[in-house]
Image (cartoon, rainbow over all chains, first blue to last red; front, side):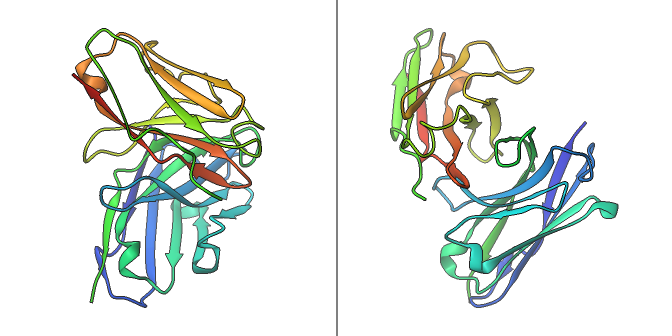
Length: 123
Length: 108
């Protein structure tokens, strides 16, 4: 059974850096074709893709947020970490991590997803 | 890149069929048969319903089907049921991943 779970602070102040951890089980991020992505959803709004990291350490970022995002993996711990700098109230959202299976990098789909973690940005 | 365009809402009566559109451009939806569709119930994480345009994951009802014509992908739900009431999102590749604006499906 594949599971993913997000963890991190529920409240951050404006200008601070957010660090989120996705801890997973049931698959290995050293297996060819495997990736883990981050997606967020502001309250009442649509999903927004943020970043992806693949088994070979190839990384992808949302063009609009690229300057603020860093994604890394720790294969031995079965974890993927996302950092987002210079947080703003508009970054308040539920942040999800998800498994991407693909035969060609960039061309995969997200399944399954973690339960999500709500991050509020407020002073 | 811009979000893919979906209708804000679609409704139907139990047993009917409804179709949700996902409109992109020749650079994303039109170029690749890579659209995936996700169902999200209130307060829950999204669930994969369709991948690579028309493929159904194991466990997803065959009442859900996907297709594409030109720059528009579509998700059709046949035999609409109360449990299908949820938000639906499409996702495609456009140089990077991009989601749709989301559609709220209401079962009348």
